[in-house]
Length: 275
Image 1 (cartoon, rainbow, N blue to C red):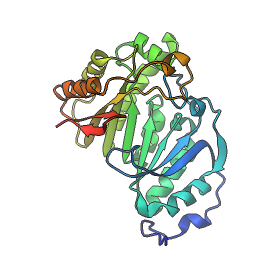
Image 2: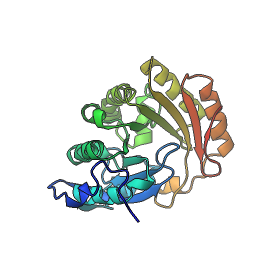
Image 3: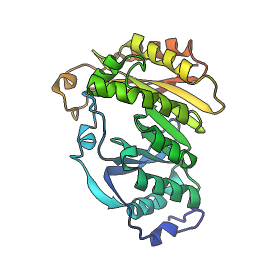
């Protein structure tokens, strides 16, 4: 029976009746894969300002899968599951596009629950990230391509070259801001025809220049592209997933270059750490 042990003020959220609303695709009450080595309650917010052609969540990114819910409803669901999770994790889409309800939820969780909070972002809104960093324990930033290559970033994100050049300085600033969080997880996905092993190496070389010193936990994850049926662009539905051995060997090369922890993530092996 639920006893509310992880809530500082038991049953608090059962009585909340706020006027904040957020567009979401849904949530998963118990997730083992969204925050590294932890259990999370994962919320997917709708809409994204990127247009990645290989995205497996395009229906969420485009707002096709969405419903308007109150933050009270989400907080009550979170409270019901608080005994079994470590993190309240928000992903998308791009969560920072709905910053007011997002900040409100993070603030309530930090004030009234013994849970950590987590945000997964593309890094496009550094000012918003900075404004809510006080309430966040874990920041995950998906770095789509080398940060010194606007053309490749444009291709990886489905943006125009002009927009890629607009966003890149903001992504770099977000990485600097995120490095101040207790735990920052930086990820790059190897995508056939777009992002290969050399590109991943270029990403971490960029990161070495951006994160020159850090006191908290910093992790880099090399991820495998998987051709999910939910991908919008047919070309990427037909591509094969990257060989897991290539993903792992790339992570091993990364580990030789950076002072922080390195992991790899594949469908075949799950998440593994490079020792």
